[in-house]
Image 1 (cartoon, protein in one colour):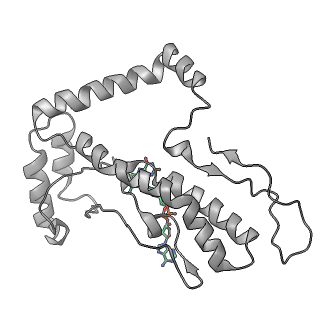
Image 2 (spheres, protein in one colour; image 1 turned 180 degrees about the vertical axis):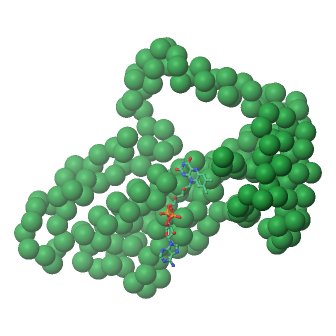
Image 3 (cartoon, helix red, strand yellow; image 1 turned 180 degrees about the horizontal axis):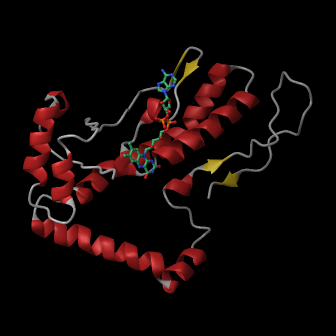
Length: 206
Ligand SMILES: Cc1cc2nc3c(=O)[nH]c(=O)nc-3n(C[C@H](O)[C@H](O)[C@H](O)COP(=O)(O)OP(=O)(O)OC[C@H]3O[C@@H](n4cnc5c(N)ncnc54)[C@H](O)[C@@H]3O)c2cc1C
């Protein structure tokens, strides 16, 4: 069994407590939650465990000289944003395309950042809200925030009405889809042999 426990707290430095202190902290915070929690807490004594503080990387720029950062190294959004893997793959595509179409890497890095920065910023903004929903502080919050959301999610996953609505809105971009990606498939580096055509029309990421 692999389990993930997350804790929202203003206290900093818990990751430096050492294993015994971390286990005590987790037990104190998760003790009365029922379901599988007692089994998970009991396993904490012997199970392999990784504990760290979650955060975001917000760098003023993603490149310095001829070195550029990508994915979590550039803009880690935290697991609660639910968009890190999407952005890492998208970033790789955009960076590769810009390098292929700009002879000057500095220009390529600037274009890459111009294109992705707004989407990354929007993705990072969603993390605190999602974290608050995932960590209700009272039973009332839990019943108001989590249960309706879980029920709505389960209903949305199986409802024929939702399936029809989502088909109908397929052309309306969500936050994640709001980036317009250039079609780099035929991109050609200005300094290389002729292997394709110039940039094609832009396509919407789906
Ligand atoms: C618990 C959890 C849940 C998540 N849930 C989601 C989700 O639902 N949706 C979503 O989109 N994202 C989610 N994410 C975020 C997502 O996993 C990351 O944003 C994404 O993996 C970042 O990709 P990356 O390629 O930048 O980095 P990574 O996936 O971290 O890849 C970096 C790689 O580099 C390797 N490496 C590190 N140092 C060295 C070195 N010195 N030499 C060689 N190799 C090295 C590492 O081993 C690793 O394989 C979640 C993350 C976590 C932790």
